[in-house]
Amino acid sequence: MKTIKNLQNLMRVLQDTQKLTSAIALLSWDQECYMPKGGGEARAAQMSYFKGLEHESRIGDTMKRALSEWLDLETGELLTEATAWDAPSQALLRETWRDYHHATRLPSDCVRTLGLETSLAHQVWIDARKQNNFALFAPHLKRIVALKKQEADYLGYTDSPYDALMDEYEPGMTVAQIVPLFEALKTKLVPLVEKIGQSSISADDTLFRQYYDPKRQWDFGLTVLSAMHFDMENGRQDHSVHPFTSAFHPTDVRLTTRVDPHDLLSSLFSSIHEGGHGLYEQGLPSEYFGTALGTSISLGIHESQSRLWENNVGRSRAFWTYFFPKLGAVFPEHLKQVDFEVFYTAINGVRPSLIRVESDEVTYNLHIMLRFEIERMIIEEDLPVEDLPEVWNDKMESYLGIRPETDADGVLQDVHWSGGAFGYFPTYTLGNLYAAQFFHQAKQDLPDLEDHISQGKLLPLKSWLNENIHRLGRQYSSDQLVRRVCGELLKPDYFMTYLEEKFKAIYRFS
Image 1 (cartoon, rainbow, N blue to C red):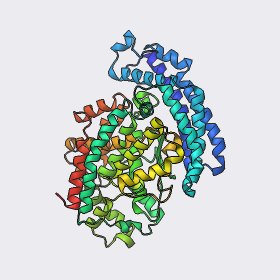
Image 2 (image 1 turned 30 degrees about the horizontal axis):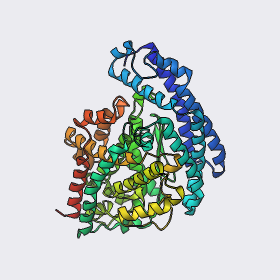
Image 3 (image 1 turned 180 degrees about the horizontal axis):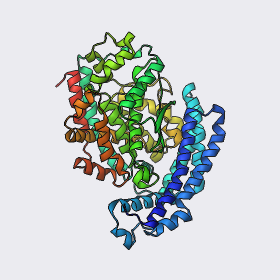
């Protein structure tokens, strides 16, 4: 990148703003992991205050001066000198202006109010979920929905207010693009679920429902994270109600998981999943942290990293060829006499599940489609918040053939709405699609990859992801990155081919 003094001034402004962003993330992480319950109200006030400062830093005079030297603040068009710069420099300016333009459309009061409401709502959501009481959470959700609709109006949109909200997580993505994509996937996923259901092969997960010592579960998860080369000198793992990853800098990345004594796989796959997110954050270039060159591209690309590690690697035959004996040594009382094929089939069992984060690879995307439809009803059609439990249960029955008996297993199971993350859910399915295509390309570029994984050598894959995705920051859009890495745009066929080949082999159908 060009060492131009004025551009470095802009970078310093951005990195100062990022310090506020990191402080907010740290407050949020602490709220979910360690903050005493009584601290909720004070924490909400702190979050609101710092989010206001962060927003003002993004649009204030210092930012304006630093950015306006190189581009037109109204249009984002680069000034003459900047048009001769190299691609990374231009990308930094382009993405900085995009963030600035987005931020200028939101009044600071709106940002502060949303920060306050979501912080308060998160604590209430935890209690409501424990008590199985949606009515406790509903008033907070009403206020958040009203604020998110207001936010969409401020940001502006052409077709759907949902587009404005989704753009925050997957830039450029629209409802018009997602709907046909989801419909095409659904037409292939439903028959696949039916074929698996008709198979004579049985995946018995009762093996995982016995008592498994939480401490040993935790330690085994750390063993796998170490094999993935998640750097514990620059990261850590903690407990939370809903697994998530926070990054304050590539040298300080926090993973969380939740441990269920009667579900062996929940904590492990959460650790692997969040470890994939963590590797992305640790792989970003530290020298550009806080700028577009040191920031992830989108939530869909971010999710591709977690889903690639969780599913393409973590549920693969090659992975368990190496790790099954090690898991058996940790839990000999349960696994010593278990046949490998029985275990491998069990971890890839396909059956409708009430809980998204515990669902299998085949039915997972049906959960996302359900949430996408409901969010659109809320934002586009003014679906009353009070009607959400019934609508949720009806759609769950329609999509997966099962009906939640409690709100905790239904409408209250996800943390996202308490944080105002409307428009986030579609990125999960996009992440699955990106993951399958990236993993396919990794196997082309690394012909011995499967052998490496079966020997517990995960560094070649981690290094490939670092080189081809992580180190690039936001130099490229999601489409541009996929084309750069794979030589073509995103193709859902890679995901369906992956599923069909894998599950045909497990469940033995044609």
